[in-house]
Length: 369
Image 1 (tube, rainbow, N blue to C red):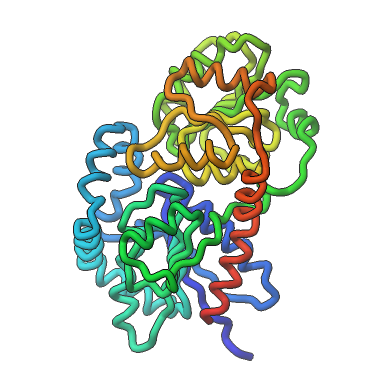
Image 2: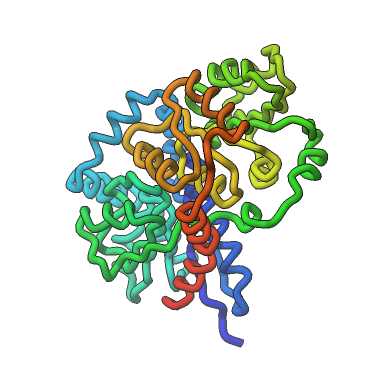
């Protein structure tokens, strides 16, 4: 019996979107007729210092927008980004060599721009290991995503394709496919039954409030404002890994009924049971909401990294941008009473692209084996 081919999938828990996209693609790979040895590796686990501190650093720094924006700008130039990758590769060299020797991958599939530190070591092996990067930023893409040594770079949109070309990637090495999301977001559901199963009110709309896996930003003040909504509503709030936020919200008195969550693995269920989503402009959450057909109110973004996602949401008919809590409240009220329209032909095209992305990427990966 032939030994199954090995696919090494690289992602990280920073933010959550990278890992979610990787898991969606792994699920699709597992549904293919031929079985593969799929190894999912977190690039920051068991890495040398200071690389292994990146998840904690990311969580802290993204709560200070000005600091995040400054770091983004400092590394945004093509020369600076390549220097960052080369420095990381030198620090991580022994670990990467061991990982590649232990796993012996036949193809490497990356979902994080920092995983490009694996490229140099992969190319020094005694055989060629195809390296495919899946970009998980919808519009504004950091140049660290775009390393010319990649065999292929998969992008989710025309905006990210433009970024790839801007940073010198040949068009022959780029494919526009979409951002992969779990098939659970596209499955038909019964909203009322879901609300009942979650012990949510079934006679009033539910407003889902999220701020990424780390519960960052102004979610506390936003919830205070949204609680003043002029119609009866239920608030489902996901605090993520932010325990201080969770405790603060748990101790607060709300006019409307609320359901409070820490980090949740049931986001597909929560989205399908909700009537509108308030979120920061994270690409993973945006895509999952589009696939779930849940209207979006964007209330915040990370400078540089998420700015372009605002226009992406508005132009695709997926939702609106609200720069203040007052505007977020007004937009939520307008969506719930039908004043703001949602969807349309472009939305359906974008949604279909993301629904099919995981399957297309998995077939593409197999073509390199």
